[in-house]
Image (cartoon, rainbow, N blue to C red; front, side, top):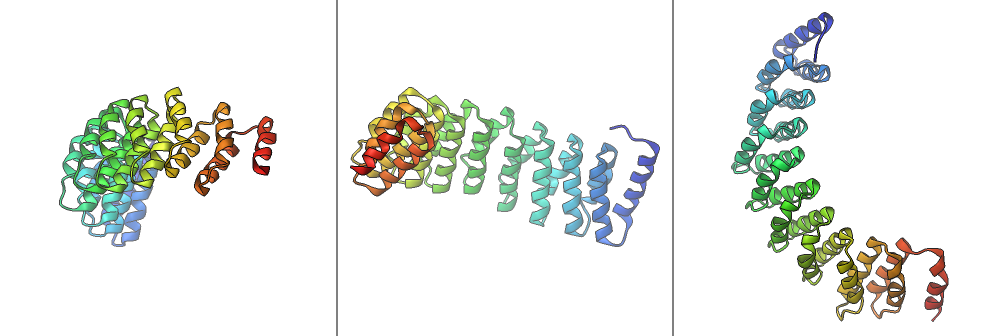
Amino acid sequence: MSINEYTKTAISSLYKKLLGDTNEKVRASAAVALGNIGSEVAIPILLRALKDPYESVRWYVAEALGDIGSEKAIPGLLEALEDSDNYVSWNAASAIGNIGSEKAIPGLLKALDHQKEDVRWNASYALGEIGTKETIPALLKALEHSDGYVCENAAEALGNIGSEVAVPGLLKALEHPNEAIRWKAAEALGKMGSEAAIPELLKALEHHDDCIRKKAAYALSNVRSETVTTWLLDALRNPNEYIRAIAAEALGEIGLEETIPSLVNALSDVDDSVRLSAVSAIGKICQSDYYDLILETVKD
């Protein structure tokens, strides 16, 4: 960013306030102003200010470095991940994510093993925010971390990136003993809509965990495969009422008109939850041509 003489004068004055003013609110405001100006020439001074004795100043300094968005700030921000104040650590993670540079990956991987859980969580969040395909190996490693929240962040990030390279790791995570991780893995597979995940997701529809069944149904509804639709239609006759209800819900998400007759039949199911799911599904995909059919079914 090129700057004119007026801006240079302003930056110079802000430097003095950031490093020398006795009032922490003034120092914090100077950091915000430098972030708004967005010039890389401010980075060395802002990095020095990351050592300010007041955490409120350090918060805004980390945020300003993220706003400027230069790779030059990464070493200092990685160090700030270990700040004693969690808000400073969080802002440093957000700043690294905003910068989006793969140069931060080795440092973030190292931070995943930090003794403080807040640092581990913030590092996994930053990896997800970088969100490039180059972060996938690091995120797959994080998916197997002993810290559950790190695993959750990794699963969510892999779903957002959407690469099928991550499918085997996410399928494995469907069997994790931690319910929240299983949920996030199923959700990630749903976002990706990968056909490679179909066999395991179909198995997950019969999982003992209701949340996993629902997430698997959601995931399958995003795949939009003929195989999936056929299986779901068959599942409307499954002896397990939970599977019938989940199948109806998933068919509603897929939204194919040819599934409406089967869903209309499900309106007569003996189980309340199945009928509710069928009603909801029909409401999502039904058009006027089927209104009479539904009304006749309801009357019967």
